[in-house]
Image (cartoon, rainbow, N blue to C red; front, side, top):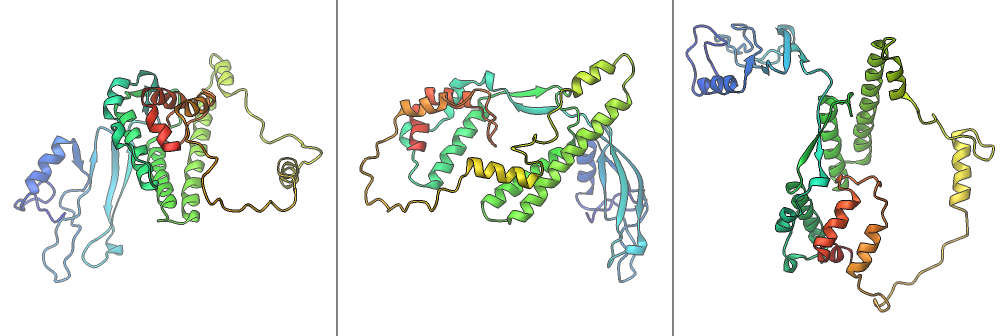
Length: 314
């Protein structure tokens, strides 16, 4: 940071803004990881070495040990730094989501765009309106805190990996990254989830005693089958896939040729009643999409402002 201060280098006068940095770290309960007076910068012109590369940690959440510099790997005038860190909070972390049952619909209605502002002439308008809806719903909906027992294997690393995965997915959809990069990050995230759950259950089984044996069994069972049963005599994955393709996607010859329509004659405008009928046909326990909004919320939104979803689907 190019800041000198006697806190990490005895005998040096504080440089400009160095005391501000110390005050900010103290207010945030950040501690200096560096071993005082161990230089991290060795000027090429053989001037005085200095402590310029600083590392900090929050002592409430992290334990840090074995801070070292590595002169043997010095590049130009700075030496690499290494240290070990352990989180104090373990692997449990509360999962935050939205409590859709307690949505303040009056507040949502205030945040939704006015009817004259609803415009879906092109994809950009559609996306803008969609994000306005999401913003209104999330502001008007309180967050919920699911107990740690619902996801006892969840940890901060998975939070960060999920954030990176979602970012790369948006980049992939926008054409800023390729499919293979996104798939590699997504698969690494899924492997981390499997490992976290496996490590958790290994710990549970290891700590199981006669009094908690049946509780562990109830948590672990029943388990879904490891694979699909035999299908029409097919046992391998390839044979099963072939049977399913022949059953659900039979070869009916070349598809018929369709001529482009010269007009939209015969098409009618989608009505608000049709949109509501389709929404109500969605099973209430159907899994939500990436926005995590269940079908019941979309139904309630449509009943409050039927013009919005009708314009988006028309």
